[in-house]
Amino acid sequence: MSGREVDFAAGPYATMKAAIIHYTQGLAYQLAAKSIRANSLSPGNTYFPGGVWENIEQNNPELFATALGLNPTGRMARPEEIARAAVFLASPAASFVTGANLLVDGALTRGVQFCAGSLVQRLLKKSRMLASSRASAAKTNRTAAATRQWPMAASAMTQIAVPATATASSPAMNCRR
Image (cartoon, rainbow, N blue to C red; front, side):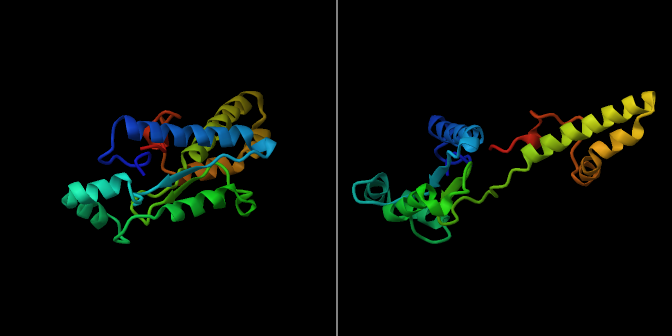
């Protein structure tokens, strides 16, 4: 969870978790053609004997109660629940799951795990290619070929309200928190 949202663990811990999620998604893209899957699992607060939450429960009951109150389920995960999710990701049942970050947190994370950034980036690129092709075609009388090249990109770009000045590094394209 700390890799997706700024929370009490912001800092090196959350930064490393976010980096692992990003790295794993990059691996998934690079290795997909070789039928190698790469996924990450983001567990929420997990309670087990001898764990950090047992210690907090005993030594800081107010913090423990606050943590429980943040989760809509009113409880923390059990280790076997996290293990089942990991087994699923490794199993043939998840054979087409790659590049995913599976949240197992009882709805503790409130962010929507949707990233249109790469799609929008590709549409921007194609739209700019279309615009460039159209300008070229106008000069050389090849407008018909240019409009057939990416007819959907221009239409899609008018429906996605992305500023013409947007680039791959614009905040609108950033899918990480």
